[in-house]
Image 1 (cartoon, rainbow, N blue to C red):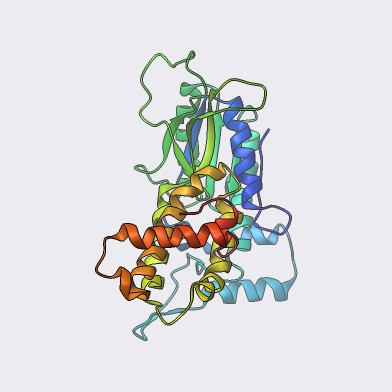
Image 2: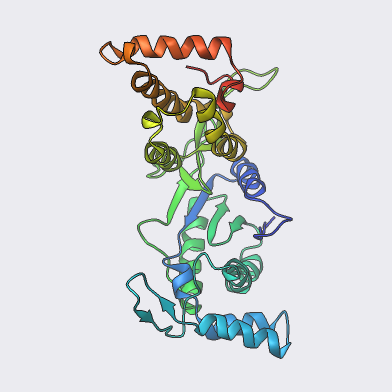
Length: 313
């Protein structure tokens, strides 16, 4: 029942999200764990002990120790020495070392201690599933003690017990405080869905989170599309194609219709580009530029990648 997800070519983030969705249909409660400063607080001594469980090669252990003990140079040029803990976040070997550490600090311990519960882990993002609220309380308390023994700390304000509401009939005897959680860029919460041959029903499903939507909006703002008046609309489509495909391939995997809110912002940016590009629209209301963009999308629906999926203005 326990699911271990590694950062490797064999396991992907989508597989972790899909497994989380499946477990949310089986268990009523989920624990959203947040480890405080995980990559900055990994204990070197415990990490080396975990690495020795996989290899006894002296030169591998030597290079791992050198990597961990290497000082950090800040932007101002100052050198910050390591103090026996932490691995550089974003480093090429950091995800591997973090997985090795959590495999023994959490995975094996959890499977032995709570065999009736399920969980997903991708790097330091962990979701635990329980059948009852009291069980979730006990599990959360035990995990906090386990993390303290491994010289880590659980964030109190961000580690919550969430009720996975899936229907309108069954309710807990009290009003749950948390009814949704975020995992790998997706928000899990109750949503109405309609399967083939079935009536619309409530289900606990994932979709792109509000944080990621805002981040994409900030990315579009920083690109300054509305100022690219030296380019044609086809040039802008070529420029944005890799980003749009990446967003669709990742966030569009679950509840694809929620991507409409993302591309609504992009279409607005394109409308502002039309106003700045053509003088005849500058002193008119935005509706005229928007109509021009709609006509282009109708005549050339394959210009932008998101237009090909039906997210036209």
